[in-house]
Image (cartoon, helix red, strand yellow):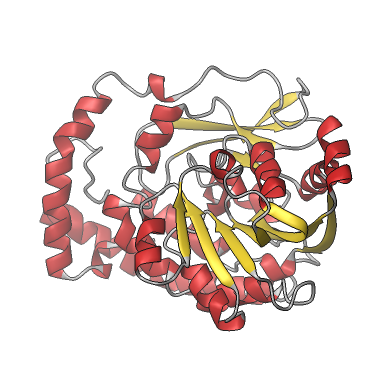
Length: 374
């Protein structure tokens, strides 16, 4: 979440040049509309198969402001929340492009690099169950910042990472990972079978087109007795309903599946895992009100230039107006940040924790076979 004032003039000029260079290709791609980016609408729940579906949310892309409208449905039986219609392969490529990489890479990499305290807390949650894991795989590792922080707590642990983006290769070159694997987890799971004492997935499953396949891949990759550490947004969080489309963890269109904790626990048991720990308050990231206010201000302010917006680029007046909106909203943002901090102390008790964390142990092959048969 940035504004024009967050960038130096040199960076702003460089970004403007990149936007101009990318605009013709984006506009050509959008000339036929966005229909091909969406699969046919499902009539059943992808988690349990129930046909009792109800709309949960209608929204737009509130971060990049790429064109398109997105719907989240909720299952009336298991409460699973999922994007419907879901993005196709070309749709995923279009909406992810320039978010974590390209135009968005510097912003997000800088944000992730400042979260060492959060990363260490996540890593520390494993210690009571395995104080010295030999090999650890972080799935969805991005640029490997979590692994770098975890290495401070577990200096003798070999920390590998897996991701679809080129960031995982850069992380290996820069020494944050012992080994970086680029690709999808289910496709690489057989190659990595039985190698790891810990597999972590931090805010990864919600991006997956098929979370159940990801969990099965984790089971194949772990040694018997190994630990699976998962952290995901909690769709049952009270903020999800209070803030509606302004609740940041909805993150459309990137988040495809949001799994209630009871569903995850049940599926882990079927696969042959035993849940050792469930945390809510500890996984809470106190940004809900701040992010909601920022998203609202961003929606009210004139748009930043982007190649998926038809030209011409915004002139000086629009840039000044955008800055003025955020300047006027600064007291609201400050108050929201203070309220977020106050709420964090009682997030679990009040149902306002926006995420949950689960640690599960992989049991023996016999248990896994029973889970697969179920």
